[in-house]
Figure (cartoon, rainbow, N blue to C red):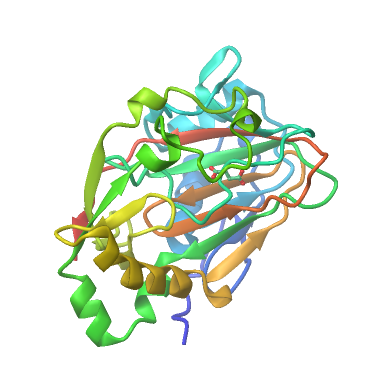
Length: 294
Ligand code: SIN
């Protein structure tokens, strides 16, 4: 059974509409372009902690306002592989052109788990979206962890895992992309994908204090001290388990929508079902903290 949210629903300054039983809420009554009062911002922070991903609609933002909002949360982390938005090095472009077949973020993943100090999360803003398709699905790693057996929880709590950007962003990357030229100018700087990170498999979330499963299909290579072959069956089990529909919510984008997710408690997956149309998102990522075990 999925563990329901453990949140206090007493929001007084914003409206919070949960998207599913496990993760995600749309926030209404907030005008980001005009700046948030302390009282509103504190409730938005609480919703972020309660729901792990929060969504806003109809936010008409300049890149400067997007940056200002991000800086209310902390320091911006500049992704070393994504092409920046022209003239805005703090904003990464997540783009797919009509003639391109592959999209960015097309597998379940947790951004930046390949960093020893992984990013807190990202604030993704929709500038151009296809007429239909291009939704993003999020999965709760709290719910995934909570619903494991006590035996498996105990075993996982003693493990650490190795994460890497090499297979996804390094010189040997994109092997599973249908056509390397399809990537175009969207990703680069492959030489920077050289280091691995080592994290607990079950983390104590830095904001909520709750345990969360912290491995993901795109960046986790193996358990620390295990070979890749030994790790594969258990990782595959966890990946199947973590993507169970009842742990997820699905966000249908509209132009000027925002999704802000917590990397430490979620996976996400950008659906690639809008061929022939353009999708352009601006992403700002926030610096995080080193992760601790439970
Ligand atoms: C990402 O994985 O950061 C992009 C998600 C999306 O484009 O929906």
